[in-house]
Image (tube, rainbow, N blue to C red; front, side, top):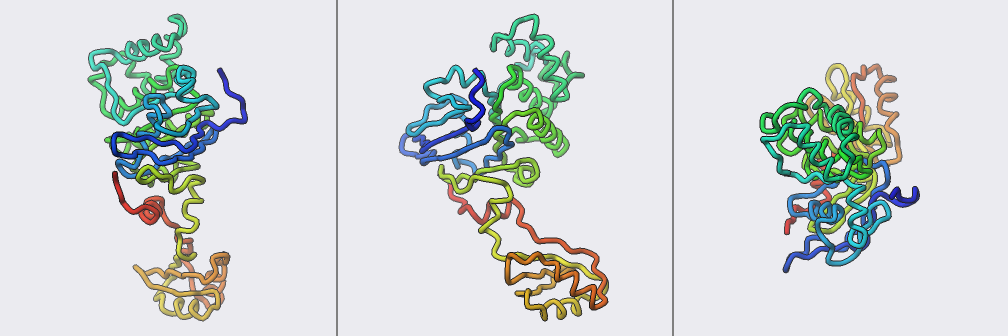
Length: 316
């Protein structure tokens, strides 16, 4: 059942889905490589959940194709289900069951032999940090622990691809941090992970690649850093000096590399004429003039700002 090593983890071609008169997906061409921790970004109604549900074999596409590890999600749905773990944004739990009973039940559903299930359940509980709660009733667990239990459930059959729809939804800051740490560990173990989330600042530091979707159409797909290319209007650096910044501002304005220098909250924002310049002249200019440089860093757009710039806020 292991696919050839050359195929991507996910490949969609002209993928579309229509619900009545609403077009949820429009000719989506998406590639996710093996080992990616892939962020799937979009507003509510953009088509993220529809895409994930198609990849999880819960929905059939209206047009186009989707493959998971080389297998067609429609024609080879049964084989696909053994390779994926799908965690929706809200999943039902049996609150009167104990944690181990719950996982043992799903292990049996995946036909894991009874003699092997006890160790498998123990292993996934250790991975998600719930070993101490194995005898607890699910209803007594916090929201964060229930989310981790949901992740343990999708790991019970050791899937190669994880499809996680808003796994940190409703969690407090500590629980979100713990969830993200678990996902990073799963990536180190060789899992491919697609995660949709509204918490873009976390995806920026968590994911190596991402896709932005709006009104069912793909706007960008590629490296996290690459999404900023073409969005940033000019290359800029922030600099903070000891004492009044006005002298430093005049010095930097005299340099031919400088487009403009703005003062903001005791710092200077130096905008360069040429985006290929590295900004090293800033420190050199100031130090040679006897100025003490306390801070020098490049101004980088965060993923949230990039998202706001490349999308229009349209919903469907």
